[in-house]
Image 1: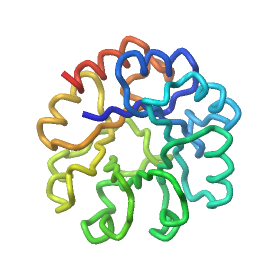
Image 2 (image 1 turned 120 degrees about the vertical axis):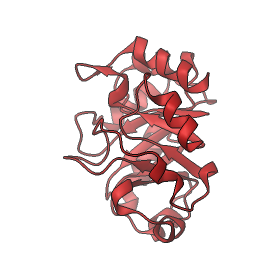
Image 3 (image 1 turned 135 degrees about the vertical axis):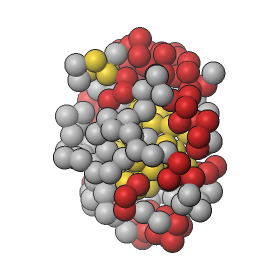
Image 4 (image 1 turned 30 degrees about the vertical axis):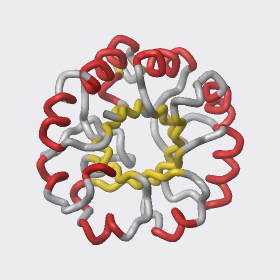
Length: 199
C-alpha cells in the first residue's frame, strides 16, 4: 500500500514520515494553511532519500511556474488539484497525480487524463483538498476506473484507514489533516497512520 503524507512543512515531520515508511512526501504550493515556499520545500527535500518520492501539489498553476518550482525543489511527482486540462499533464516530464473530488467526477473525465495516478478526494471545501471530511468510499469503486491507479484521500486518519483500504483496495492513500493535532503534523499520528495502512 502506497502512503502519501501531504502538507509537510518541517524537516522533523518529513523525517518521521520517511522513517515510518511513507512512499510519498507532499508539499503544497497552492493556497492552503499548509502552503510552503519553494525555498522551504527545497531545504526539506534535501533530507529525503531518493527512495521516497517528493510530490508538489499545485492548483491551476502555469506550466512554467510548475517546472521552475519542480527544478528548484527537485520534485519527482506533480499533483494537479485544480481544473487543469489533460494537455498540461502531457507537457510535463514528471510522474503525475490528478486529483478529482468525488462529487465532480466520472470515468470518462478521469480516463481523459494521462496521469500515473488518480487521487479521489472529498467534495471541495474552502480550498481544494485538506478538508478532513470523509465521503462514501464505496463511490470510488463505482467509477469504473483502474483501482491500481487510484489514491484515496479525504478525511482519512489512523482510525479509519484500514476500513477505507478494505472497502476500496486502492493503490495508495493520502493523508494531511488526519495526522495533525491543532493544525500541525503530529509525529505519533503519522507513525500510527503508516503502520495501520501498511499493516
